[in-house]
Amino acid sequence: MNEKPFHSGYVAIAGRPNAGKSTLLNRLLEQPLSLVTAKPQTTRQRILGICNVEPSEELPGGAQILFIDTPGLHKPTQPLNRFLVREALSGIEDSDLILYLLDGPRGVTEDDRFAFGELKKRKQPKYLVINKVDLIKPKDRLLPFIEELSALGLFDEIIPISARKDAGFTRLKTLVARQMPPGEPYYPADQVTDRDTRFVTSESIRGALFRRLGKELPYSVAVEVTDYHESRKLDRIRAVIYVERDSQKRIVIGEKGSMVKEVGTEARKYLEKLLGKKVFLELEVKVLKDWTSDPRALKRLGYHQGG
Image (cartoon, rainbow, N blue to C red; front, side):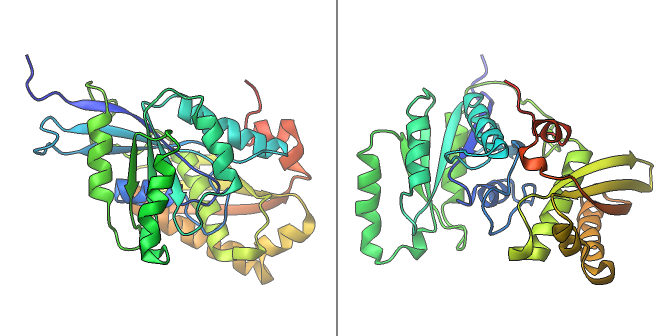
């Protein structure tokens, strides 16, 4: 009989839009996998991050945690938003444990209350992670806030963290790993995600767009990788950036193509670091009118509306 069993399982990271779920995933993985910006609803599809936990006194056999970064939970109104919520709920359904991330200084919002209603329908253990606890003012408000959330009877654990001060992550990872059922690892120890290189490429381009354009960037932007040719020393990639209107296309291209060039350079450097080889990245910007409300366009771009 194995006295030091290995543990493995799925953990859904849930929360309202812009709660910091992608930042949390990247911190737990100790590398940037998921798109991070200050804008809500930037995560559009479930992203799996593979975290291997070394054996320790508290977890002698070690563990593999499969974190699912889900889109923000909110009341949907448009086709794309309905897809986002379905993606989030699907990720929660598949998990052994739910981590719900709450922005401490903002408190409980209407979107959080909507999410709590959805969580009540799920039988998995639920941990509430309160982020930015160092920014909660006055400081003596934290304990009553935790007691108030505990009184909901919804969460099995409440874990305060501070991403800014890098506090609480070790305890969080240990508590999560201990909750995972005994089982063999699902993926090799050196694998970080189940997503293919095309998906990572499109996300790196989309992330560069959000970071470069800030408030100017419309949410109606999508990226499609149209060609990907791999070789030992160089990968050649072509991708299309889609927007809904000509005015948005001009913003993304920039004066004399300056903006799309900057976006391409940032995405290329990220991919070269990730892949460990040179990348040739060619970008084109096209208008796909009203794609966020067109079911056929949504399906073509990977935002499936079925099921």
